[in-house]
Image (cartoon, rainbow over all chains, first blue to last red; front, side, top):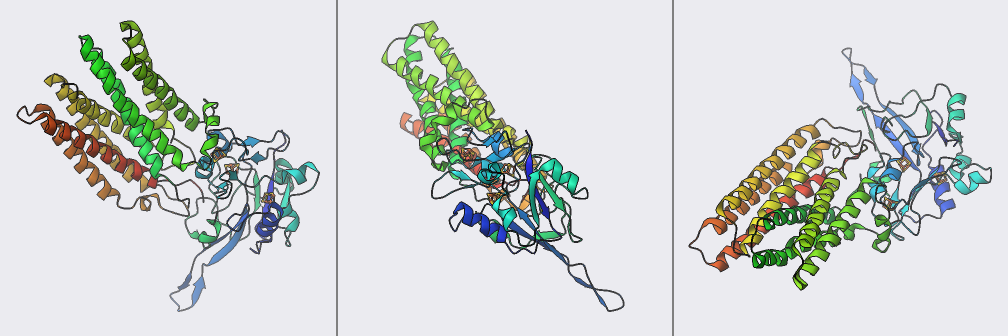
Length: 211
Length: 284
Ligand code: SF4
Ligand code: SF4
Ligand code: SF4
């Protein structure tokens, strides 16, 4: 299996959420669901120095996250009905098989990236499916295509890592990723904080918790 | 942060493990009953733990979006901790329910009854075990501690012993030494639950993510534990009086047994509900 994944360039992302909306449009999602979320991570302050001048430690950056199609997906491992599968060809993690999902929300509970949601209309688990139909047709996922800043790339994750040797596996507010091994590659902007950071906070918590 | 629809799960993990332990304890005590009529009286009363587990199980389906697909969980034994839990509880319900129906409708040969009830007890022990480890999930550090299975098993053991003692009062009561053992087991189990929950509280202080500090998750943690201690003490007091005060009427005795069962289960529910409130993933 070749594991496909996303590359996200935090030096480019302006937090415009075009990826979120393009995905919503392609997937025809209701108002209360999104498959790709853009986190605003902020922190720091202005501090007065001994000489009376002010220095800033303020920082902020964006992080566009969808399903990371993890190599060790907690959602799949804990689903009691086997409704989540990992695609042999791409490593895409696909949730909520229509005929078997019981809408128990276990996948929602265990994913450390807040990715799956139980669709309140269908009572089935839904999430990013890597635009598997487009990928099978040799195209790119819609979120990647739509980004006006070209901050997203998609491909075999090892190729993405090779193409971006300075990139990392995660930045705050993502967790370290040791549990699920997310298939994601991230270019760090100067403001970026590493997983485990406690200086910043998610400034748009309500927005990203909307699912 | 995910808002969990956890009340139905708290009810399930209160009633089902306690009912299953009560079934095992009653089955053990039944094996020491010599006369046939006495055994049959106990067989009738086994309906109580069975119904407790069944009602807990039915309540738990309230948190499912699509319960009509629930059969797919049964085909998935071994697939995930949750499927193991559900399948083992269903196995218990099948064995205990079929035993009860067979035992009250006809005279079962001694060995058949013994083997059947033993199979139900083994299923109960396995199901309590699977339920206790179903929350040991790597991505949920606040649940993935030793205190989760410890508090669940101790709570179930205690409530199961207390329920058995109370239920046996409906069949004329147990020998005083046995009643004493069950009540002491209940008191000790409550102490274990309290200790586990206090240690969990201390551990929560050390778990922090960007979004939350785990210690801030459970509102009124200490107050809840206080209520747990009070209801458990009340349950113990009521059942002690019901079991040992010879001067009280049968009616009062049975009323006290019911009140004590309710207080004990309420206490366990408070702790279970508190546990669900401590939900937090390692991530966002
Ligand atoms: S990000 Fe979450 S939903 Fe996606 S594969 Fe990983 S654990 Fe599953
Ligand atoms: S909601 Fe559906 S896909 Fe998610 S764990 Fe439950 S059964 Fe599996
Ligand atoms: S890959 Fe497709 S489904 Fe996933 S976030 Fe991008 S557009 Fe949405």
